Every structure is written in C-alpha cells, then in structure tokens.
Picture 1: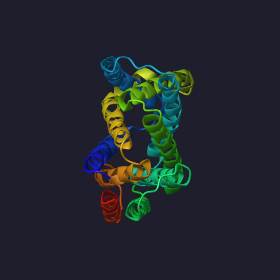
Picture 2 (picture 1 turned 90 degrees about the vertical axis):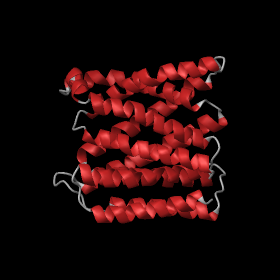
Picture 3 (picture 1 turned 120 degrees about the horizontal axis):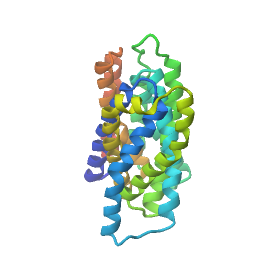
Picture 4 (picture 1 turned 180 degrees about the horizontal axis):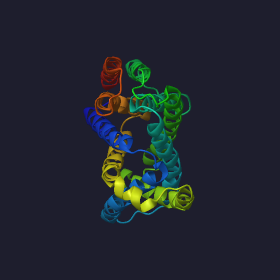
Length: 290
C-alpha cells in the first residue's frame, strides 16, 4: 500500500471513529435520526457533487443513476443496524465487532471471487487486525442494561452491511469509473429519498420528527459532514489500492473508538481494549509494508 493511500485510509478511520462517538450519544429515535443526518449530508454534499460534475463537463451516464441507488440501499441497512446496536449495547462491543466482520468478509470475497491476490504480509496484517477487533469486542460491557449478546448480533449485522457496501462501492469507483465524490453524494441523496416514506410509520410509533431533530442536531451535523468525508477518502484510496488491503486498514479507527468509548461512556475493560488496539496497530503496520 502506498504512503498516500495509507494516509487517506488512516485519516478516514479517525474521522469514522469520531462520528461514531456522535452517533452513540443519541438515545432512541434511531430511524428519524438516521433520516435527519442523511438529509443534512445531502444538503452539504450535493452542491459539491454538482460542482465536480460541472468541472468535468457533466459526464452523465446510466451507471451514475443506478449504482448509487444500490449503494444507498445497503448503506440504509448499515445505518439503521448500527444505530440500533448503539442504542442496545456498548460502543466498545458494537463498533470493533462491526469493523472486524466487515473487512473479514470483504477480504474473503475479494480474494475468492474478485481475483485479488494480496501478498502474505498484507493477508497476515488483515488477519491480525481482525484478531485485534475480536480482543476489543470481548471486553466486558460497561452498562448493566446493555447486553453483550445484543452487541454481538447488531455488530455482526452491521459488519455484513459494511462488507456489502465496500465491495459494491469498489466496483462502482474502479470498474464503473465513477467519481467518488459524485457517487457518494448521489448515494446519500437516494438514502434520504428511500427513508422518507418510513417517517409516517415512525410518527405512528410515537416518534416526533421536529423535536428529535432539534434535540440531536449537533450530533447529526457532525455525522453529516464527517461520515461522507471519511468514506470519500476511502473510495479515493480504492482507485489505486486493492479493496482487500483498504478494508482491513480502515479498522485502525477502533483504536480511537474503543478508547474514546471507554472514556466518554464509562465503559469498562479499558486495559482489555487497549491490548486489542495495539494488536490492530501491529496489523496496520503489516498491511502498510505490503
């Protein structure tokens, strides 16, 4: 992995951990909150995407229409499962497990079906990163009402969604040659469109849209800016680096996420999580040397 790609991925991992801290702060109201930050993301990123398209001479294609829709559907599953996990379990369980399952599945599919052939050091590094996430995720939960079983379930589901959108987005920006900024901005817009019909069901269940938006607007704003920015950096890295290397290197964010989670949300098992974080760092070093 080149120094540029590694820098992009590590920056993205840090930003990803920060916005997940913001998401963990939200209590309940998951569907409306996800819809709200997708709306804000579209407001922020669609003008940027239009400017990029204009600078390129408006290269509109059919793939630019349908590929972001597929990505948007998978991202919706990811966002809702992640938010549900944070509502029912510790960040220190859900976050590292999701970030571990995702690259494991991504690497397996990329190697078995995608024809990618990372070197031995890169493969070993990916496995070491995944082992580190398992160590972090096995730490004891910090809040009595939070279930480790719930954390494992929602973390695994979120990880499966991560693998799905990572592989699809790799196809979109490499094989379909879609611009990462334009592609992700359109995907965010489609997420907003697809989530909007479900607001009425949320209202019937007692979720008031306006009060929820007023209560959590700061957290939504952080996610609206940092989540797309982090992933656009990953998409750019994918254009020059195999996805089987990018996916595990992204998981360096669990170092930040696990430690901040233990500090901000009073989660226990700090030493356990620190050991896992150091294992992850060792894996990143192996991937970087490939």
